[in-house]
Image (cartoon, rainbow, N blue to C red):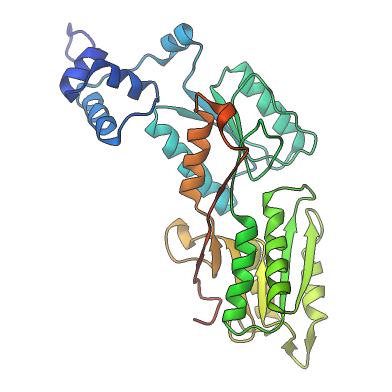
Length: 329
């Protein structure tokens, strides 16, 4: 901005974009407008160098245009992708993210919720594991994958349907003896339904199966013991495996290679999540794909909803199957 020239105002942005002043106000305040209008306003903001005074707005409206995202970490590729898409959805609405890593520490989950309240964020999106977590009533709160109560919206993919889909796919690909393997929390949450869907489909189709489920903290070597017990004369008795996450599926596949069991020639493997190599390349394994972008959009739209009480207690989004080289196709 040239010396002596006044800073551009919201009215200047409206004139530059060719829209009403109210439309500019809705865009900068993160409210819903048509995408065409949003793009015009954002282009005008960039052109004029308009700077929105969010701190002044916070004093006037008790809003900070900030949403806290509480998540275990971004080392896990699925969590990393989720963070990316939630941030993109917030940016579209002119909101900022307060990113909180818990590293699965239950006490940190509580501390971050308290910190979010103290910093007067406009809402919280959380993927948590504390069985005794208390959801505050004075702040919009949306959970991912975990149902608390009818008053706290939960966003998740169709985990039951994904487990069913994995069993059906293995059956279609010629598998005659299968197993489900996972490491997971003792909490009852949406990902627990992956096993339920798989078992239900196997029973209905008459497909033999076994379950090998470890709790968080149990040694990975238990999987090696389990698989070793099912090898006879160098051949694994299972010809199809459904594994709770893609990350675990990849580790299991490395273990199978060490045991001279070929994937997919000897045993076909399907994971869950839809993780891609380097984030955007081929799928790491054949997988049940979670619609991460849609999950992120649902989380953000819900936490910013002015009618949170009317939102369904569970928003369940469809999954799909994708080939990733670990099945015979």
